[in-house]
Length: 409
Image (cartoon, rainbow, N blue to C red; front, side, top):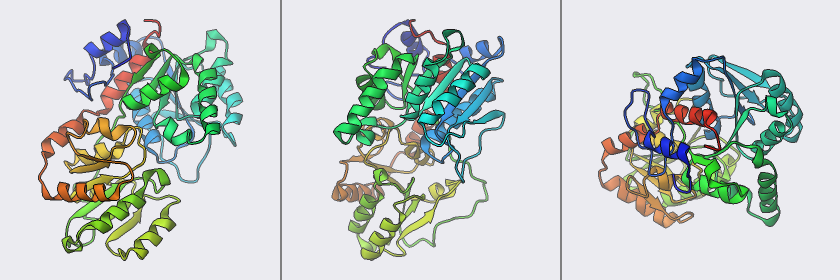
């Protein structure tokens, strides 16, 4: 990966992206993955315990990606703890074989003490924490533990931090100060795209040798072979997007772009997901006269049927650290249109070689790209091949290599 040096990183590149069958899988020009042989070597030694720390078990991309990695570790005989700060009414289930630890902290800062107690008592050999500012909390908890009990610490960043959290000077100062004061206790900083990795290096001030990019594991959404069609009877092209209904996902832009498509095409747009933007989206649909043509079916625990019978996938976000749903669509060979937002779509779609990239916030450009994608055939095999490069075993091996590798190597 660019800006990463040292023998460990050179070895990682020489053996990068090998899955458990030994086949080479390239996840992009700057992907970093580990060698699966290291996994078995460590697991066969003395018992190892690894902890994954998350804010909650919300159905988000970061949480799902973390659970895929935790499941991969557990299946290899490693003792795995999933440490959760807050409890939610609706949660995704933890993987089988993973011990769930609830800190029951009412807010993030109050999680420092119970997390430190967990580390002292459970003594994990490696601890992975995801999502700022929980990464800061984890770094503080580890820093307060004696060196003899201190686990190797990996801080994973799933989002574009500056666009998400640094929109005003107060937030930007908070972001810079918290990372620069606490990230010195981290062994590795992990970004889920090269753009995220470069950003966190700049924000934290740490040496590039302590940062690495590991793309998210994104398996094909599971679906029973006899799953019926969930779309209304076909009148024209079926256009799909999947994601939480939140402002950064900017489904309003997609509705504006959809309204610019020719009504003669009879297209249907399904926005699969749930969130606080629902009332605003419902009002926008009604005002635009698109009721019945734009669907808001809510969340889908298994969205495979939506992907299977769609004709086009569109991602209209203002920012995406990675973009798991792009890969899920590509697993089904779906043509893809995405905004060229920071940072994931540009990398997942190989700088636009595998899908249309449009300027952020430009409804007219998005509509033109959607029309072009519907009118011109795509190489569906190439899309499926690219999606297959984001395999779970490769990500598991990469994270395992980080848990074992000496930062000074």
